Image (cartoon, rainbow, N blue to C red; front, side):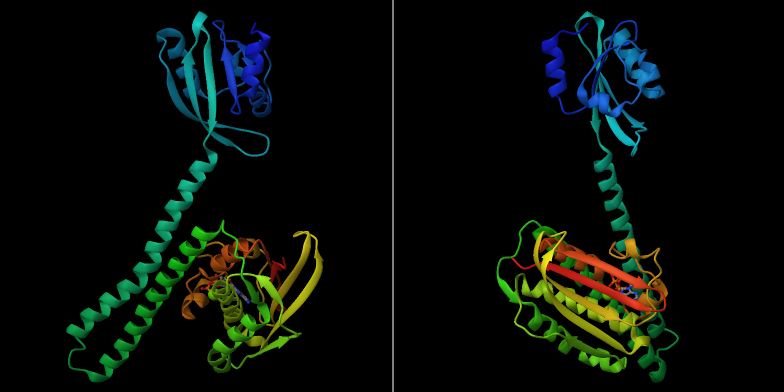
Length: 343
Ligand SMILES: Nc1ncnc2c1ncn2[C@@H]1O[C@H](COP(=O)(O)OP(=O)(O)O)[C@@H](O)[C@H]1O
Ligand SMILES: [Mg+2]
């Protein structure tokens, strides 16, 4: 048995701890362990609770050789599996103590970082390969062909532009992430920012034969914000609506005051960017704000998209303690809602 003082102390340890006796039975476990291991019971052979063979080997070597060790195991839990580093060490009187450190989030973050680097490399390599190919053609086969040269130079310019946009978007993404914990405090007029975005994108929307209209423009409407970042948000949302919703012929931007927004628990400003394009299949909706996720990658690339726009939007909105909601119905168009706390 373990005395009350030790038990209280064990319970105060935030990570799961198990103590195994010389009979290989569970002698004690703390509160965290009882939460993780559903079959936990004092007196049970520990192998009925922990079936991972690597762990058995570590416990054995602790018993036999007094050797402390650390093993990585995956523990099936009711809600989600947990990846743990288990430190296994010998206590006095031949007891063995197992301490479980949850490294699930760490491994997930590492996997995300790996994916991100792989994605960036892939996105950069495609235009780079094209550029290198055309340089070679211009040196060789197309050397004395002025018509081909012009055509290839135009393609090279487009590919270099794509790389340039990608690098620009990556830089903004890392800048926004770095500042995410610092909430902006200056008051910015949302209506003015939206108007400026519409103005900036006018050449593009005119070329696509899309009218962009601002409704309810009874400004100014002030919110604590970073004006440059807010501009980036509306530039990207309106640009997307024009690019991907062009078939609808019009994009509406509606600014509304919400006296009490339930999720933000207070007064908020909602900006809706609404198109009447083809809309987005429901299966894509939850993933649209992931880096490099595209509902239609061929179309996005053709339009020069980097796949980072909505990821940047999401981070900027998060920095403003706001919410981004995406609603869409196939064939009806899409609504992107940016909700910002008014105070
Ligand atoms: N208004 C819209 N209508 C339909 N699809 C959209 C709309 N806005 C975004 N999408 C989809 O979401 C994807 C991600 O958008 P974004 O992150 O801005 O990347 P990009 O525009 O560079 O491709 C786009 O590739 C497109 O498939
Ligand atoms: Mg975009």
